[in-house]
Amino acid sequence: MSSNDLVYDRRVVVQAGQSARGTKLVELLVVLFDQFREHARTCMAEFDLSIPQAAALLRLDAPLSQRELADCLKYDASNITSIVDILERRGLVERQVDPSDRRVRRLMVTAEGTRVLARLRECLLGQATLVDGLDDDERAQLEALLTKAVGDRTTSGWVEMFRGRP
Image 1 (cartoon, rainbow, N blue to C red):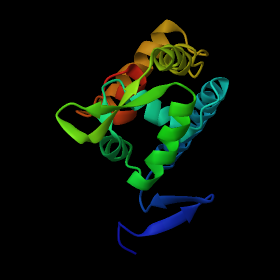
Image 2: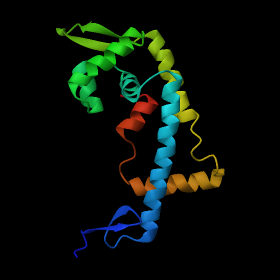
Image 3: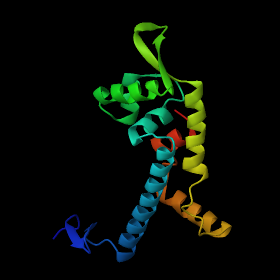
């Protein structure tokens, strides 16, 4: 067996030679991710948004065409139309003609959409209880360790979307 062969250990696929501690750490990160995913679903449900609708709305801090939105979200363009239709019917976004190319419609967040976005972001980031069991020193230590673990990659598209930066 080479060092790249996969082996099964307690129903988890791990790289051969990976330590049990490394495996446990990954499992705990997945549990933490699952907790955040459930928190995010609760926040989205509070505003009657599906995951694709919330992702689209969160990405529209700056006007985008439907094609640009599809590219940002890594969705097929054919799926974006129905997502935007729902957001538009709810008064959260509107399609406006692009002044530089009248064939293109730019998606703009409405005043109501801006209000919902602010509340959604507050729920997603401000009300997350993932590390409530840690004191301030433990949180600082965890932040330092996670910062070290991610290295040069200090953000992601999802983090920027939650923060409100396109």
